[in-house]
Length: 592
Image (cartoon, rainbow, N blue to C red; front, side, top):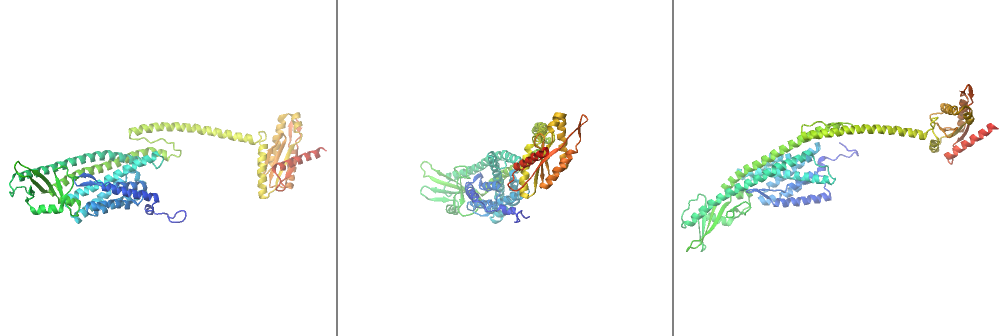
C-alpha cells in the first residue's frame, strides 16, 4: 500500500530493524555490557545448575523499544557461556530465543498491541517447549554425547531459566511503565498485564524459594552421606597395615607417610588425578571436608562433574607413630547422576509452577479485562458517552457500576438542564442582537448597522467596480401628522411607508431607518440614473397609500435625496452626507 506522498509505506519488519538513534545505540551498548556482567555472575540453583540472568535485559529492551537490535545484544551476552561451559551451542540456543521473542512480539503488534498484557511469557514458553528443549537434546545428547540424566536436567533448567527471565523482564517492564505514567509519560499499564505480573510473582517466587531450599537440603544430605562413607574407608585404611587390601568397591585410597613415601590402591589413578584433575571449588560442594576433583581438559561442564571424583583427605597421628596422610577418592558419576535425577524432579515442580502460574494469570487477567470491557462497552458505543454501564458478575464491580450509573443519571439531568439554559441564552442573545441591530417599530436596520453595511458595500464596490447608490427618504410632515392624528397614526405611517419601500427593493438592496422620519436605501449595482428612477417609483408607491383616521384621509408622501459612488476617494460618510444634502435641496425646491 502506498503512502499519501506516493512513496512506499515502510514495512513493519523494516521499522523493526531501522537504524537506531545515537542515544538508543548508546543505551543498547550499555544493555549489552550489563547483560554480559549478569551472565558472568550466574546464580546457583542446584548442584551443577546455574541460572543466567543476562537475557533479562535484552528482553526488557525489547518490551520498551520494540527494536530488532536487541537480537545482537542477546547474542553478545550469550557468548559468555562459550568459555564457561566449553561449547558454543548455548550461544545458538539463547540467540534463537531472543530472535523468537522479537519476531513473535512484532507479529502480535501488527494485529494488536499485546506487549503490555504479558504476551512475552507465553512466547517464551512456546519457544522453549517447541525449539529450545529439542535443541538442548540434540546439541547436548547427540553432539556433546552427555548422558541422558544430564541432558534432561539441562533441558529442564534451560526452560525454567528462559521462562523465569522473561517473567522478570515483564515485571520490570510493568514497574518502569508505572513509574513513567506517574511522571506523565507513556500509556500506563494494562489491567491484564498488572494481574499477570502480580499473580506470577506471588506464585513463582515462593515456589522457587521453597524448591531451591529443598534442593539445597537434598544435595547437602547426599553429599554428607558420601562424605561419611569416605570417612569410614579413610579410618579403615588408617587402622590397617600398609599394603593390606581394604574392601571398598570402586573406592581408591592413597597413604602418604611422613617421610614422603606413598602407597596407593591404584597408583595409575592417583597419578592421573595429580596430573589431569583439579579441585572443583566450593560452589557446588557444601560439606567443607569434602572435595570434588574435575578434569583440567576442556569439555562441557556437565561432563566434568560426571567424570569427576569425590575426595576426602585426613592426617592421622598416633602416639609413638609417625603421622600419615590418607586420601580416599571415589568416582562422582553415580552420585551426580542421582542428584541430577532428584534435581530434575525439583525443576519439574518449578516449571509446572511457572506454567500453571502463567496460565492462571493470563486466564484471570483475560477474565477481568473482559468484565471491564463489558462494563464500558455501552458507554464507548454511545454517541453521547452517557450510557449506563452493564452489570457485572463480580460483586465489587457490581457496586462500582451501581455508583457510576447513579452519577451518570445525575450527569444526564444536569446536561439536560444545561442544554435548556444554553437554548434560553441563545434565544436571548438572538433577541438582543435583533434589538441592537434593527428598528423595533419598522423592522428595518438601525443607524449603527447602516454605517457598517455602507462601509462594507463601499469597499466591495471599489474592488469589483460596481456602482453604488444611496437614497435618503424623508416622510413629509410626519410631525404634523403626529400632532393632528396622534402618535399611533404616525407610527402606522412609518410602518406602511417601510413596507411600501420594501416592495420595490431588490434582494441585494438594504433598507435602514436612520432617524425619526428618515429612511436610507443602500442600492448595490445601481448607478445614478437607476437610483433616480428607483426614487421616483418609491415616491409613487408611497403616494398611493390610503390611510384614514376618523373618516379623514391621512396624507402620505416622501422626499428623496440621491448620491452615487464616484471615484476611489469617496468614503461612506461622504456618500451619506451627499445624499442628505440632495434631500435638503429637494425639499427647498418643493417649498419654493
